[in-house]
Length: 511
Image 1 (cartoon, one colour):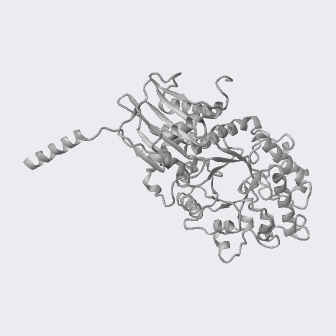
Image 2: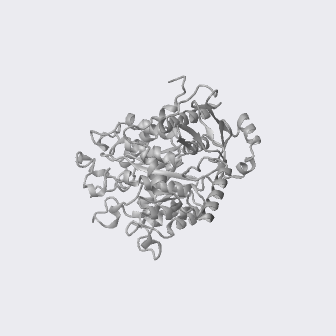
Image 3: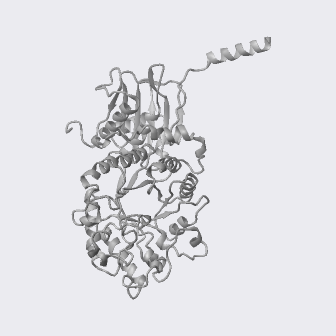
């Protein structure tokens, strides 16, 4: 009993002697290089954003609004009595001075890429320096997670960190079906930004009205003016906003299991534009090109001249012998397909826009190794896999597989053919983790997390794929608690009251 009392006393003395520090916060994705400091920063009367350039100021408005939403912390007009958040691009005079004065300058300069950021705290301020506004935003997303409230006091954990992503392109593909609520799309975009994604692909299907081709959307669906705020939201969050229109298969404008065709169910006079079963465009009919090009143009205008466009081109079932007629195949089906690809890729090349294509039409179904491992639709008479060599090498192959949990060789196949490649998993965690890990191992362009008809169900996997894409190869995702690390951020984005961060694109003087 005496020994127990002595040991208890020693433990109590050691506890008193230990430095008092805020608990280490859970950051997702976790920073690449971080030193947690014993002294936390007290927020006080609010936060004061210090930003000079318009780009820095816009990021400051996003961070300030999120501090209010997540932590009920107001924005102060000046730093007196408030915690100052300094945002500086590294090429600016202030950014250079802050970087030169930092003990982390060498680590920052050695870090790869233009999405890196440096974050430091001291007694009453936080400094974030980055190469680009996107990097500043990522520092802000980390800062929001470093903020805690205890004993009636709001604090930010003391830290010095240099952080950067492993994969350069980290995108989320979102479908808008006729039953999709736009607030659900908003929630997904906000969650993607929270996990430091840098691109959003929006595929509107038959859910976006077209001025030039009103037959391609249902009567009671969304207008461009309703979709535009979501595009501006992504831009405010420093993401590439990428439109998509399927340009061979999936021409029905609806999913295959819906047994609906948005055009032919109502306007049978447009039947010549499609193959006999209506699933794919008729590649021998030249009238499909004014149709496609008009719709491309409307999407490019809506998305405000994007750098990328997704052409789809997957699951063109007609070539699989589902119909006897070769009306839409021509005398040489492979030449028909090659001419189609040349036309549509050429449209975007003339506009300096890089295109994505789903990979599956360019893998031979009976290939001795790849065919059995890949969604592969190239069979006679099209033999579309033989057209691969005619594609420009800047076409991005979106390699999709929704069940692979072992290393999948198809991405390496396209990479060795000389194409940029993005890995495209879906909602299964093991599949997403493995696909993204393989992407890091190969050093390919990046990943495109898909959601399809299960947007809400897929959101936890969106977080998991984002963490794996950011972190070093071999990162153990199980180190992050599922409930606190992946479900909490979703709970923080209640769909009934989502922030309108697209408003931060307007300066305070114009609001």
